[in-house]
Every structure is written in structure tokens, then in C-alpha cells.
Length: 413
Image (cartoon, rainbow, N blue to C red):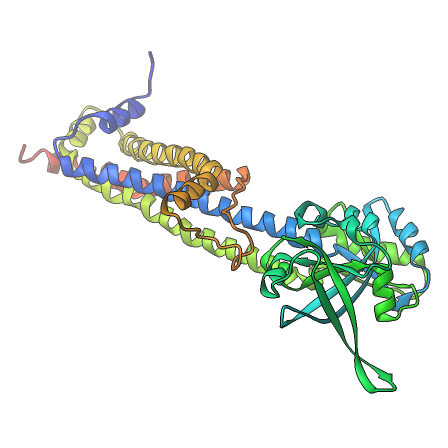
């Protein structure tokens, strides 16, 4: 079978047992270092992709993708709801009444965000129904003054379904007894668990009850939108508001939670660059390996030169040898990284059960497990970068080999 001489000798040098075992050791450590660097980089970026996905699904599944409001309240929210629902990029719309207050229960007080909703419409724009621990959205009925709270709030106030709580608004009412804060007694109808921040301050009540409590005369504060493409939410909201005519104000998730996702993206980029340096260090260890190989094979290079091998051919021989080391390390590292990314969640769960300790406590962290989402674009970039750096690392040793003077190398042989 025909094989180019450079490829044949390069592969022979790579596979042959060397007289110098130290060179073999350095070559193996270079390959292992490159393999581990590539694998760790793939796994870490997959975990960061997993956290990004969970944040988007949970936070943006609860908070509005976009909101359309009036000056104070919407005089005819039904018409606004029907109009924006007709936009081709709006999947669903639902009215809401929103306000801030305090909730007292179990002898404790906590600040809350009160959200008045219509259960039958809220389930179309929110993931809350999929994260109910106790109760259901349908338990919120008009006139019953029921409330659904988060798991952390229930724990801090020591509340259970059926308990009574008092909601206090930051507004005063003038009564014969004097100026008193506006307050109302509610019954806990359900508990949800979405994430640490939302579980601690987010509450749901029926919109009719919210209208009575906040005195909106049955009108909604605005309409929230669920759109097809998160990144087009600002544009979609503006288009829907313009189609309504009149004076409306729009807001979207990029204004309320955009900084969070930009921080995650920046963190992923910086960690990726830092870990890429590990791959670079491992790849450029190939330089020291090939320099020692060139020194060890000086007489062989001289003999090849006297037999007619050109400097270019000598250079290609050592480029092949370094490329093989880099290719094996990168390919094996990529395979390990892909397998690790798919199984890291199960592995961490097994370690937690073995040690009897939970690394991600749900009371502290947003999620209680280590998520992972493998993106093949990341795998391609990491593998390509590893191969490219491995090839670049071979240039100097190969050039040095091509500059060996046969007469000088064989003078003392």
C-alpha cells in the first residue's frame, strides 16, 4: 500500500518504543494533559449551559416575557388581551394586577409581590402549574381570598395549606378609629417551588380579590405576553402596543432580568477562555516533547538527509508525529467530555447519596441538582481549537529538525 514517506516515518516514530523512556513519559503526559483539558472544558461549559437553560425556563417561565400597561389601569383589558393575542408571534396573553405588600403569619413578617391573576388564563403564560407542591391554580376562586405562596415563604412563616395569613398594603385607610393600614385576611390555598428567589417573595391571588384589595374597580394593571422568541420580545411588545393605538407603555424581560442573563453569558465566556488556557498549556507541551525527540533522533535525521530527504520532508515527519499526539488527546478528550456532560448530573447525584450530603441545597441555591446541556457547537469549537493549537505547537520543533546539518550530526558517530 502506498503511503507518503513523511507520514510513514512520523507514525513509526510515534508508535515505536523509544530508547529514552523519559521522552515517552513526557509525550504521554502531553497527550493526557490535552485529553483532560478538552474533557473538562466540554463538561464545564455544558454545566453552565444547563444553568442558563434552567434560569430561562424557570425565571422567564414565571415572569412576563413582555407587558403592556396603561397610564394607571387598563380601562378595557379584554379588548387589549384579544388584540395582542392576534399577533402572530404572541403565543398567549393574560391580564394581571400587581402590587407590593407584606404578609404576616406564624408570628413573622415578610415582604411580598402580590400578583392578581385569572387561573384559567395564567396557566397559558406561566409554568407555575407545573411546579405546584400543594394545591392547584384552580383553588384560587373569586371572593374566597385565597393565596398561593412559595415554598421558602411557607417555610419561613411556618405556613401550611389552610392556614390564615394577613396581607398588609403600604397604603393607609381613614376610619373612625383613625388612620389604619389597609389589610386583608387570606387563606393559603397552595404552595409552589420554582426557585430560591421567586419562592421567597412571589404570591398569587385571584384577580377579582386583588381588584377589591387594591381598589382598581375591577380593572387590570396590564396584560402579560408569552412570545415565541424570547429575544424578539421587545420588538413584539412594541408592535402589539402600536396596533392598539392610544397611550400604552411596554416592558419586557430584558429590562427586568436582562442583567442576570448577560452576567451568565459573560461568566461562561470568561470561564471558557480560562479553561482554554489549560488546553493551550497541554498542547504546547508537545513543543518540549518534540524538541527532545528531535535531539534524540538527530543521527536518524542526518541519515535521511544524506539519502535525499529534503528539509520540507523532515519537517513534515515531525509535524505528523506531533499531530498524532494532539489528535489522539483531543479526540479521546472530546469523547470523555461528551460522555461526562451527558452523565454529570447522575454522577453528582450518586456522589451525594454516597456521602450523605447535598452539594446544592434547595434552600440556598436556585436549583437542587447539577444541570447539563451539551451544545455541539461548543464541542466543535473546543475540539477544533485543541487540534489547531496542537498543530501550531509542532511548527518550531519540526523547523528545528529540518535545520539539522548532516555533516555536523554524523561527525562523531
